[in-house]
Structures are given as C-alpha cells and as structure tokens.
Length: 489
Length: 60
Image (tube, rainbow over all chains, first blue to last red; front, side):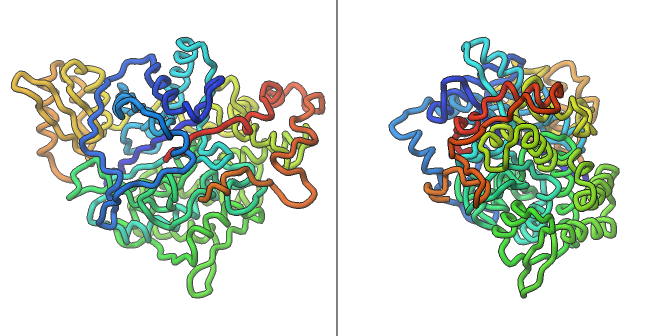
C-alpha cells in the first residue's frame, strides 16, 4: 500500500471564568492569539470550499445551529481572518478559532505513531496557551478535549484522509460507512446521558446523538455519519479528502491510533475494490443503537430482514485486509489489538477499559458512584464525565487514571515526524518565515525579488530529509520545485 | 435536531433521580472508602454542577 496520509483536527471545548457561550467566539480568538510559541500568521484561504459536495454539486449555504444564530443576533464581528486568528506552528500544524472553539489541526502524517504524537503535541499547545491566556487576562480557563456540552451543542474531532479522486462517493461511502459505525465499540469516548432521541444511561459515543442523516455535506447542524464535503486541499483532479466527522476526541492515545487505523484499513480495501459490503437497514438508527447498547451485543439490522453485529462487521474488514492488502506493522497491530479488544469486551472488561476511552470512563464513573453513593441519574456524573476530558494533567480525571495505572500508555508523546508536506510547512515556518507571504494546506506563497511565487506542495509524497539542510530560501524553493516533478505515487 | 431536543435528558427512567432534579446528593461523599487515591483527591476539587454550567457553541 502507498503511504496513507492522514491528519486530525480537534475543536476543543473552552470554559472561561465568568464568560459563556455568547462571548465564546471572541474569547476563542483572544485565546488563540495568546499562543506563546513561535508561529507564522498569514493563512491562505484561497483553496477552501466547504460547500462543495463529493456527489458533484455545491450547497448554497451550510446549515447553522439555531441557538448559535441567536447568540450572533445583532452582533458584528471583526473580519473573518482576524476572528480566526490562524497560526501555523513550526511542526506544520494549524491552530485557530473555528466557530468559537480553539482548533488544533495536526500536520499531515503517514504513520499512526507520528499522528498520535502530533495530536498529543496539540494538547500541550492548548495547555501552554491556556497558561498564557490566564496570565494576560487574569481569567481562569479550562480546556476540554471532548465533543459535547451536555446541552445539545457538539463540536468535532475530525479525521482527514488523502484519497485518490478515482474512488468517488459511492465507493467511499460503501467502504467506509460500516466501519465508521462499527468502530464505535472500540473507539468511542463515552458520555453520560443523551442529548436527543430519548434517554440513555451511558453511551459509547459522544457524537451519536447528533447524526441525523447517513450522508451529507453539513457539519454544524443536521450532521451526517458520512460527510460529503469535497474540499481536497490538493489538486481536485487527482485527489480527494475523506473528511470524517463522526468520531470522538480521544484521551487515550491508543484509541486515537485505532480510530484512524481502522479507517485506513477500510480505505485500503476501497482502493483494491475488496471492501466488505454491508447494507444497513438504517445507518443513523444503527449508530445510535450501538452507542446505547448496554448488552454489548451490538446487533445491526441489515436490509432484507437480515442482521449481523458490529463485531462481525469489524472482523469482515480484518479478514479482507489480511487477504487483499500488504499491511504495514502498524495496521497489523491495529487488527491484532482490535481482535483482542473484542474478546476482552465480552470477557474481561477491566482489561478492555485500559485501552478504550468509553470503557475507562465508565469504569471510573462506576467507581465514583460506589464511593459516593450515587446512581447513574445523578447529574454530578456529567461533571465528572466532563473533567475526564480536561487536558490539564493536574486536574484531569483521565490523568488521575494514568497516575493510578488504570489506563495503558502505549504511545510516545514524541515521534520522528513523517516528511509529508506538513513537515515542509513546518520547516518553512521555522526557517524562512520572513520570506513567506501566505501559507496553507496546499501551497506556500514566497516573497521573491521577482514577486510572489506560489509553490504547490505534493500531498502524496514523503520529501527528502535533505530539505532540512537547505540554508537559504532559494535552495529550499528549488528543492520543492524539483519534488513537484518527481514520480507520482 | 429541534430546539426542544436541546435539553439534558434523564439518564434513566423510573425511580432513579433525573438530570436537573435538585434533590439528593450531587457529589460523592468523599469521606467514604478509598481515601487517598488520586481520583478521590481530584474529585474534591470538581464542582458537581460544572456540567450544568458548561455551555458551548456548536462546532463542526
């Protein structure tokens, strides 16, 4: 298999002392501007197209949450670019204000370990920014890596996968949707209660309440399980970007890696035309039912009055992957780990809970109930759920579990970066910032003596390590231009 | 999702207390067993009403 390039973008929850949702957009702007590290300011918005749909049309407008519209009524915001406060970091990440949430988008990564390290680096960026923000404003701020406020407002942790344009909507939808639903049992972050569609005690997924369609291009409201946004951030004639919005933000690094690895397996099978074919009777109801299934049977209704289980769906991908794909060490480990977990989920929940967020949190909440004489109906449990996701190691309940050796730490927080275009973006930011006019996912616009020069970055390749040795911007640009002419993957 | 759906729902029906019900214990009695562990130490610092106060804008 060719390198499967992927990235994660996480919108963090933000709680500023004495402030609220009505001022959240402005607060998030000030928060991002407080980032104390080195960064480039000057994001290139030219190639953004969030209303373009993979199915070949463009939406007139994207739906907006009615409550957010109320917050915005009568307000006039500063220009969008100022409000977003984009920063490009020296590892190639993008840090900005997205709809009132500080968002950290990792650089593009080829390997799971480098992607997990980049995601963990994002937590440190948020933490350092929180300290700087509090020092500047005198206001305490808490940052949460979760996806809900328990009142019906959700914010995303998205995955992005570079895909070949030839795959198209139907192939991607059929190959990936069953995986997005079934992986919930191994990747959900867990949630106390429900925010729509009736009641629930404890759910596997933070996000399942918010999906109302199988596929569409929306992200803020009327969200789909399979997002059809067609914004490739690369030449559209050759590339697409699968934009996955149905996953949860994970605290346990192994869960993050598994979440991405499972989709990579589905995409690999889509590439060779061997993805398992599962026709769900109702994908939205199925995802919701899996999220709320206290029996852990995870039954899935199929068309034609047939049924299967999430376990069988996952195993069908693993068997096909072993048969049809040349799997690297990481994806082999994802399969082995997932199979082990599926056995543990039914036979050894304590072991299972060491490596899966929803189970670690559930076990923790059960312990809290035992200690405090609480029941699942006590609303304080939602506060402890929230504090599991606090990124401050001194306050977070997730970090308490680490200290108590109740969750596994299988991934290093630092890894050798993959030399993707994200690495190039970081190099340019670190070494040649004065020579950069604008910078984005897709290209760098350099200032040269002959005027602005746009240099497109290859999304599908790993660059030569020699690029890091370029001592002047001219040499750096020449290397990039040579790489543009290199073999296609 | 309709606006009417944007309210916390009971965690379970029946005799158990419902979210939003102010009666009964809202926080663990931290004097009970297992004192000294890290979880217990951190629980003491958490406002049991934190999630009720936590409101966010919808993101993507």
